[in-house]
Amino acid sequence: MKQKKSAVLLIYTGGTIGMKESAGDGGLVPFDFAGILEEVPELRRFDLRIDHRTFDPLIDSSDIVPEIWCSIAEIIRDSYDRYDGFVVLHGTDTMAYSASALSFMLKGLAKPVVFTGSQLPIGSLRTDGRENLVSAVEIASAKGPDGRALVPEACIWFNSQLLRGNRSTKMNAVAFDAFRSPNYPVLAEAGISIRYNTPHILPLPPEGTELQINTSLDTRVAILKIHPGITPQVARNVLLGEGIRAVILETYGSGNAISKQWFIDIVKEAADSGRILLNVTQCPAGEVNMDLYATGKALKNAGVISGRDLTTEGALAKLFHLMGCNPLNDKVKELLQLPLRGEMS
Ligand code: ASP
Image (cartoon, rainbow, N blue to C red; front, top):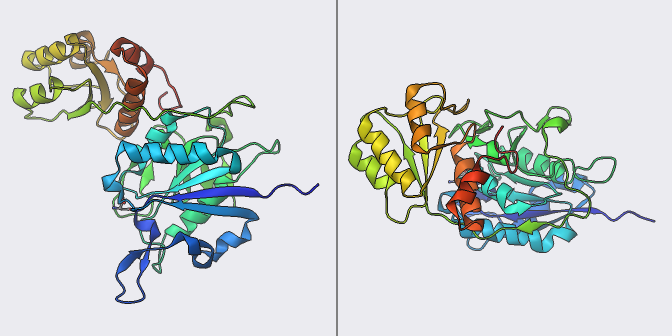
């Protein structure tokens, strides 16, 4: 019996990758994905059915809101049985936030959800978009000898590297290698062929596991970046801000902040009010360890939770997800300390 052709769904949300020069004045206009196979004929070489869904309106990723994440999750859920994998074309500016969010929102995922984009429009001569798109499609359809997906997780493909979505961050505004996951090995790398780093890829869920999506996100989170000269007023406004349920403290080095009593008092007041306080480091690599220095210890004693080696993007997405699912802050605090989708070590 002839095997059913594998199929990949392209979900085009917007961003630079989908732009090309208009025939008229040469300005950049969004490209119509109905013509994807004419525009990127390399895709025909795959023995695949490639369908597409295009957001209307298209979204510059600076305008991404959690409702868009919910729409992406719903598209994946509603078409899950018809495709072997999904490629989400997305602007680079907030791609790490969206990939982090989807990693938490999709539970029991047994198929690849590969985010990609580009620094130069797909229609421009030196574009990185073609190679990013072609390889993302290859990864989205890649299967092991058992016929199951090689990469059953939400990830980012960019400049020949596959990164775990919730470990990634945009590190460079202009270079082709825009993304890194400093605290986690690459999941795959392209040379002549794509080499999968299987021991570091999330395991498949047991066969028959249903995909569940969570579209209930609680966004009452603030981020406080600690810096020299921060005033009590700024610290107070953020940590004790009205309607704020959780604060991510972006601290120095291995989780240190100001040791002055006024600061510790505000942190303590925020923790005592029941707010969830999560400590992540400002450093691109490494992790929080609040036992190392007195300043870190003071935060821990005041009730701050260690985010260990979470990225800020991962921390925000994890909080939105956990708070959306759990009305009790104590439960959220407990779950924050467990890795849910490989987001922390
Ligand atoms: N502003 C664009 C966006 O993030 C940039 C890009 O696609 O790289 O949507």
